[in-house]
Structure formats: C-alpha cells, structure tokens
Length: 396
Image (cartoon, rainbow, N blue to C red):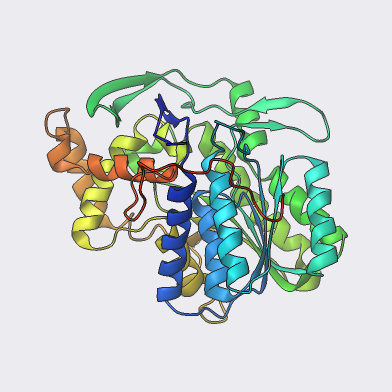
C-alpha cells in the first residue's frame, strides 16, 4: 500500500515502515561514526522502541557492541493498517543488529505488568545470564497497577493555581494563549503512580531477586527539568512531582544494589520533539525557539546525538560518573546554558503567529514530528508501495 501521514490533533495515525527503517539506519550510522565506546555488553532497555529508549538501544548495540533485550508496547500491523512507528523501528533495529552479528530480541507487551517482567527475566536467564545496564525509558499516559488492579491516568496540570501562557499549534503556526486549571490531589497521586519511580524499582527488584544483575550493574532512568517558562506546567506541576519521585527512587535503588556495587542514576535530558512533548501546551513553542538558537550555535542535538554523548562523555568516560549536587547526570547542559536561555526568554515575549517562522524553527519542529512516524526522510520513495506487514524477527 502507499502510506501517507494522516493527522489527528497531536497524533499521526499512520507510520511508514521504510521511513522508520531509514530513521533507524541514520541513527546507527551516526553512532558508528563516533567510534566505539567501552561500555556495557548486556543491556535491557524498558521502553526501547522510540525516542530516548530507541537511541539507548542503538547506542548500546552499535556503540558498545552490546547484546540487547528491548521491551515495549506497540501495535502490530494488520492488512491495510500500519503498525505504530515503534513496531517498525524495532523490526528495523533487530534486522540491522542481526546483520552486524549482535544479539537482539524484543518483547512486546505492558511493561508495567508482572507477566511481561517475568517473560523478560526468563529470556535474560536463558540467553544472556546477567545484565550490565538497565535503561528505563517508559513513556505511558496510563498504568494498570499490577498489585492493586487499579488503572491510573497521568495528567499534565499545574499545582496551586491556573496556568496561562503562550503556546503554538505546530501544524498551523498559530500562537495563542492557553489556560490549564490546577490539579487536585488525586491528579497528583495518579501522575506519580504512572510516571514516578515505583515501576522502575519493581523492575530492578525483580532482576535482583532473580540474580540477573551483574556485579557493578548500572541502571538509568530519564528525566527533564527545563526552563522557567515551562516550570509551572512541567517541573512544578504534576509531571514534576512524578519526576521528583523518579529521582528519589534512584537513591533507593542504589542503596539496594550496594551488595553488587551497582548504581542507579537519573539522566536529565534535553527538550526534544516526541509524541508526548507535542501534546504538552507551551512545549512546542519553547522547542521551536530552542531549536533555532541551538542550531545557530552549532549545539543542537536529536535523541541519538544526545544519548551517544551521554554514553561517551558521562556513563563510560573515566571511573566516576559526573553528577550535579542532587546526584543527577546533566546532559541538558547545552540547552540550559545561560546564553541560550536568555535568548529564548527575550524571543518568548515577542513571539507571535506572524513572526514565529522567522524567529523560531517551526519547520524543524514539523520535520522532527513527521520523522517520528517515518515520514520526510531522504532516500525513501513515499510514492511506491510499502509492505505494512513488516514483522519483528524475534516476535514472529
């Protein structure tokens, strides 16, 4: 079938298998161009199919020559219906990894569930023995709690008072004011259950109890802080409470891993175009201004550049992993530079529908959004028939 992008709000309903494969190849080529990293050799990535999780799997495999197990929850294809992009990404990754002589197997299902955890433990035990690095990169709006059976939904809301600020519809370029009502305690609690550190800790407990963590094993979860302009709706809102919980969990996991000299870290990453960030008011406008400035300064990074630098300059660069005063790895350092943020603050005030195309990088935002779904890549013929029924080798 000929596959075209079909949009509904902040979601693209189709994905292009050949475009997703090209996206994966481009990321692999970037990692290979940066040279080998003396890092982990057996890696589990929970949330491995898109964004930072996919970049972590690629950096592990093609930077460190690691065997990888990827866990994700993606919709497979059906005749006449495309899969989700993460499905096609994972299919392409496995194909490329296998061709390079690297072990790569995937598990598709709800990573919050006990069943998928057990399936993953069984696979690691049978094939790899133990794991050196666990990347936790889940991004889900809902969580069915495995112990209580309660379905929790996260919300994106400020705490304490209504938040009003500018945002942009990146499809149309219209800059408008948006207001978001404050969260109640139930909203906060639910968001922490979904996006906090509890499930990360459950994964690490399960791996530890099954003796599947190698001595000196490291685990990493991803977080975001961001600038003052997004603070009320992000870091000081419901998501911020969940991120606080995630960061506190790193210390608890480290304490539990003392007997094997293991450590847990949270890496604070850069703002990037993802399916999740596109739905957050204010963030698309901030990213379009940020991209313009960082590209002009020569310091712009996408997911793969960010994670490759995380591996080469932080995780596997000397004996000590550098952290801030709160124990976090800061790979958002270029985004948060004073000169970058002061320029954004000035542009934010003057940004309008009329001038955003000139002072921001809305075109770059749109391009990155389309790329998430496999569209807009050079070297892909989007006018020819594609096989929507592409399968993941280890899941067939």
